[in-house]
Length: 214
Image 1: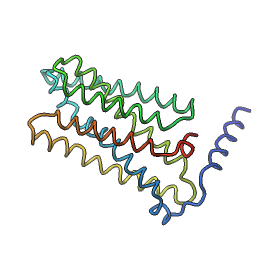
Image 2 (image 1 turned 90 degrees about the vertical axis):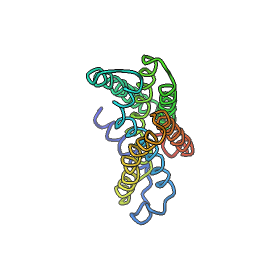
Image 3 (image 1 turned 135 degrees about the vertical axis):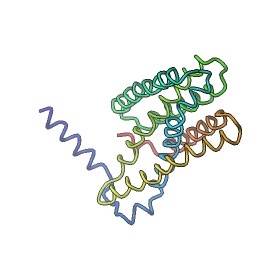
Image 4 (image 1 turned 60 degrees about the vertical axis):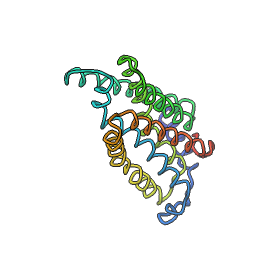
């Protein structure tokens, strides 16, 4: 009985998706390009953080390679907890947008306070908040496009979004490094990542709730 209920639920979800997507139509759909921009913003935050994490930890005042390595693990542990919490909550309440907006804003706040705090303990705490928010956004994002993409063009749409978004994997570390070389500090790079996460959150709110809240 439980298996049949799950099968019916999956069938209903598939039926609710639009069936008119063709491969050429994907490139003409503004919603797909909106998804590309949103994913780009979230991947910017994720890659900028993960690539520069040891440098960011060192900038808080932590000394010694062993200490930096150990403390660098703390934000990622927090990210695992946050991903599990927000993922379960989004599925439970069938709400997708705010379960992306809230982590993105948490990430932005974490970046800003971690960059400005002179206290290493506070800086690490908010760097952990930044990691929890930024790293949570990227995997939870996929509940948006998969809610409305259907038919033969769905795979092409997902591939397009993934390709455009993952360009941030190159842009983000380069941007943070460039700003660090330009200013001599990681603060400006963290401010930039915070701003990009806020942009991503704003873009998520432009997505109609009925399109993705399933």
